[in-house]
Structures are given as structure tokens and as C-alpha cells.
Length: 110
Image (tube, rainbow, N blue to C red; front, top):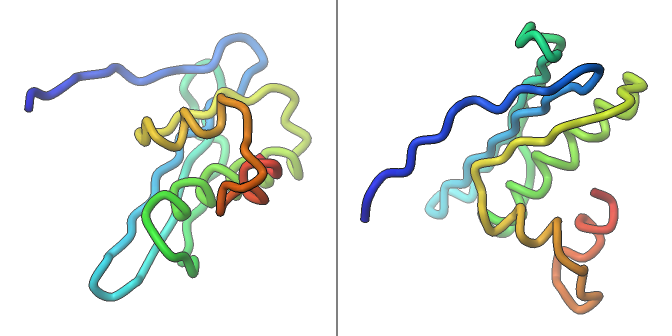
């Protein structure tokens, strides 16, 4: 398996880039989320982190995005470019939501 290198993705114009990440320990069940927001010049605007209760790694990734978007909404951010390193999470969010998906409520909120 090879490595894929990606560069930092920056917002443009009035956009805010929201970079999120999450971690989940399958042994302990401990999960945490975090993220930071930058303006189009790359300056830090705000950040967040915290512990969450989840059942698996996918759920914690989704909650990281949802939490970051809720903060952006509360700060009246007009346009958000959300960046995640979880391909599965991005695919779930960008495709039609199946109501039978166990995380449908989180996906609809996002």
C-alpha cells in the first residue's frame, strides 16, 4: 500500500476552511474529535476539541464534521469548505442518504 500526499486545502474569498479529525480506540471505546477553522489567507479563526460517546470510528468522524459545522453556523459563517481525511465519511455525506443507515440522523443534520 502506497502513501498518497495531499496539500493543505485553503478556502477562497469569503469561505472558511474547516479541517476536522477524529480518533477512536476500539479497546477502550474512547473517542475524541477536533478541528480548526481558517480564513482564505490561512489564518486561524477558531478551533475545537472534545470527547464524544460513539459506537465506532465512522460515527466519531461524522460527529467531528457535525460539531464543526454547528460551530460555524453559530458564528454565522456564510460559506464553509469542510476538509476530512476520511474517504468513507465524505462519500456518505456527498451521496444520497439512505433512511435505513444507522447514522442517517447525523447525516441529515450535516
